[in-house]
Length: 138
Image 1 (cartoon, rainbow, N blue to C red):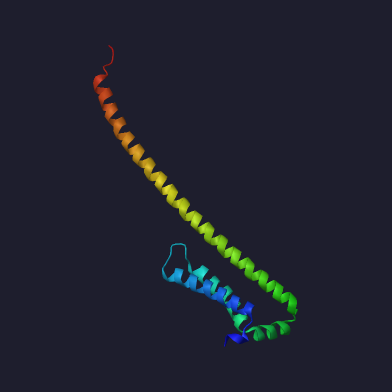
Image 2: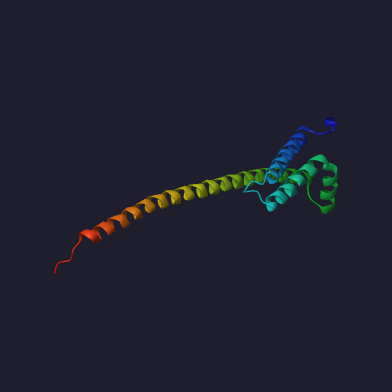
């Protein structure tokens, strides 16, 4: 079965399957950064790449009917694949950074609340003591 695929087709098929399965697993696990839009986008883009890799003759006949050149299509296609890999990787990094920033802000806010909470208790105790000991001059 695999002898009819070129090495580049096999690589694209594997990469597409990895991205599709990874996104499906993240969606099923309901990770907090995973949305239906990201799943649909991944299925559309990587599903299209998978289809192109599995059925290049159909895609070639469609591209010739539409009037595209052959070699240029290949170059554009690979550029498209590389750009989408980079974009999805950057998106994952940005989401992770946002999540870490949110956690950090929460921790800082909790620490500040603990500090001001203990300080406000001290201040209120000190003000009570000061009112008792302070006697205005007549």
